Length: 418
Length: 104
Image (cartoon, rainbow over all chains, first blue to last red; front, side, top):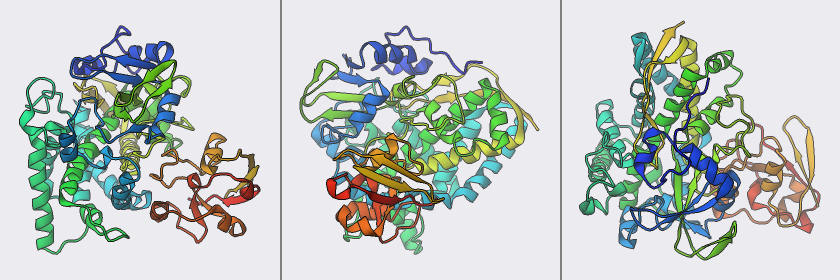
């Protein structure tokens, strides 16, 4: 059975959030990879942009931050320099500045540090699944995919459990700021002028700023120096400490990026299981423990694209990209490129090697949380497979209204227990 | 020019590497087991960690500041001759270099 078939006519407007309400326009990406791999796209929302859609091209360009900079914004929306300065995190910096922050925060997310979370993650999975699965029919995004990363974020930040729904709602409002289900300040549908200095142009950013400050003050008051936030605020080998405004932006990044991406990876994995019945048995056999997470994350590609800006003119595929032009790496397209993946529209949990681009592979901004994401995905599917005999679709799935975050925001399924 | 990777089980891979190519790139394009290089040689992942044979270590140059900090985060414990192989480019002086791939 096919998991999902794209319905776009091959000429979808990639700049329109509405395009993605039916899932990513993969027919358009397939055409672009063949006919126009470096495609100029006009855009009603601002200056036009170049779309890079082939796996090999994304990899090659992503490794050249001196030519294609992150320091003018990473989404297609145009920013003034002062907005950029106020809102940026280390995502919006280039080497070597990027490394100065990265080495501080990377300590908290190294493979070894994250591996110690496995037991906690497994306990959370058991709790979530044992509550949800007996319902039989439910929305798998809301009941499972949303729950695990949210609760894990709470453990990592050291926030009280009762704060988590609020925190996650704010994170959703930030990153899904083009979907009216998640924010009252829809990015492309109203003026967000007064919030333009806030992360993601959103008032939720202001509220998270206050929360982050209070959280650190409460921790300091009780002498609590544990957890990721304190690790990040600790002085580096050179004695430098992250400035407060940078910390608050980083906090927003953690709440937003650390949540949605894992949620929509899990949702896409559940979608795949519901349509390719052989996958469940493969997980149950234990044969795909080392490879399943990366394939699910390839299939999901929650970060559909990241944008760079050309620092000088360069030629590619017979065209000239000009200094200052926006260039988008469409990871969602690279991950379906049949020159890099055999039968890319099928989920193959044993796929090895799996050179997907979901984490921004090949470049300095490789996802900081990738080890945590992989661990959460692996453990969740292991625990799920232990408990169910089947999982089937139970209604129409709904996709997020966003050309930046790819996600199934509603996924009705029916399961039978073992 | 040649470089050799020794796996934890003792098996060896020797590859021709052109001057200027990083040893991470050389290993990943030929799928040497245990060398992943996910960040493409940008010092952001530590998945191309190798132990340089002590006889060759001095010839690979200085360990950079960020490289050292990322080595501390690598999955296998850092050793005195640890390097991120993306930071070592093949030169005539390194022809014949021997690297051990960490056990993880």
